Amino acid sequence: LQAGEGEHPNPTSINFEGKFELAGYAVDPRSAAPGGSIALTLYWQPLQPLEEDYTFFAQVVDEDTTRWASIDHLPAEGTSTWSTNEVQIVPLSLLLAPDTPDDVYPLIVGIYTRDDDGGFKRLQILTADGRLTDDFLELTPVRVE
Image (cartoon, rainbow, N blue to C red):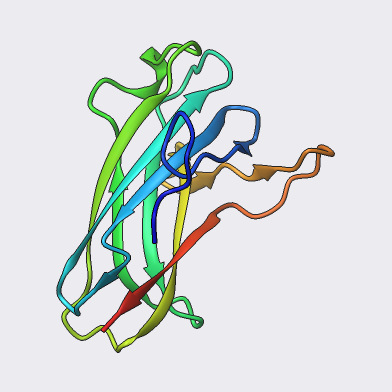
């Protein structure tokens, strides 16, 4: 599969609570062996000045929510320093568990902060008509074989 054409690979416009827009992504490879790795590059645009620093996550999950790969990334410079005029590139590397069964799995992504009690507060997707929906985005399927 080839990436869609545009300013960024696979251009998209997914709004996360009016704070970030996912502007594009790249996945390489889209098929990997158990124990292999998948490189994911996300293109994020801050939609407003950010007061907090956010962590980005990506996971390869099963229907029962078993995580076969997972990564959390808090940018070193902190998202509170990001300009609303620039798209930020966030590279992530997902390492599949060696016992991942052969199948096709969704690759999901999202954003969160930690609250004072150590809990997670994920940003929800904001639809064009203003409704908040899921707190993750099913980005694309990946094959494990």
